[in-house]
Image 1 (cartoon, rainbow, N blue to C red):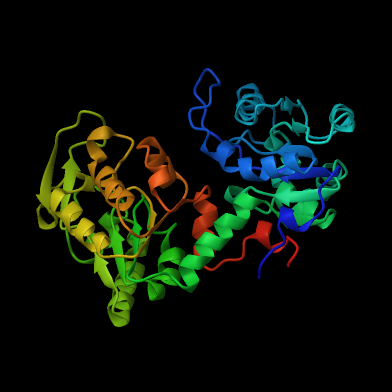
Image 2 (image 1 turned 45 degrees about the vertical axis):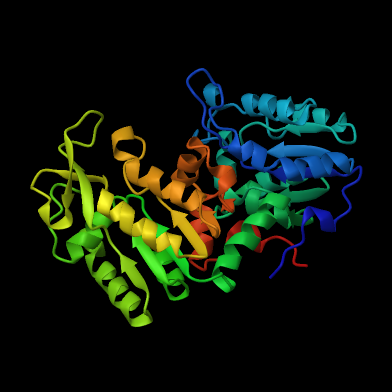
Length: 394
């Protein structure tokens, strides 16, 4: 059901609590190394500024475990946001309490403050009602623009929506429209390319979306489990033995639906999964004992590229090799380049896949890059996201 957005409510002169996802990577010096998630929220924030709202931003950063961790304060994100907006953004050192209330009382129309890291408070992840109420008392309206956290039933995601009119931000609206569109009426042929380490985390996605695709391409660490299920030796590669039966059934389901299931034809294997390790390309039936699968091979890259070049819609989630080690990144890089040049709708699942695309400078060449890894997977599994369910319906 369509949800109300920030454009469906009158925000002028109203105090608006906006849940954003500023969970951005930082280096040891506290400098932001990738501001994609901050930039993704700009349309909502700029809309609120333009319409003279008094804006109270809140976010988590990493996993401080309910305690204050100095290097996980949100001040650097406030600095970066102020640069992007060309206006001051005041970073507060708490989420609730007199200092916060005082700062908000001084907010001018179009002004912005950013609350401290929500996860400094154990009540946030516990969805504590008292903490939710204290947050809600800071504002008149609640806007959720943190798609990447919508699958979490936390105080700032679902709790505050019990006490304030709750609507979607523009980023969240775009995420829901794009991802739900994949499931409803994609242009065909429609391919899903899945990588990453584990089958277990993607099994629900694979099962739900399989009847809707024309082809399924499997790479990454999970390819070892698929290959093992078909009787191939995968050396010292990690195999999810409890998933072997599920994978076999998935293959049978694909065949019964007429879905083309493409597994690797060859592999880049290494003696060790580390920089500078001896590596070579072998056919899937030639993996020796003690070696590990690190990437897909050149024949697989060619076969996958050919399949994708015939598609009108592609959804990709999960690197096809150990992307963070350059010598094991060719498969991921090659297929990302293929997608960037397709005349098709290309949707990139969040998390490490989005990071890879961003690092390669290809974000703008994709139709859509999701900001939420876990959230996008749960949505495409057919699950109702807690943070979406609590928003007002149109």
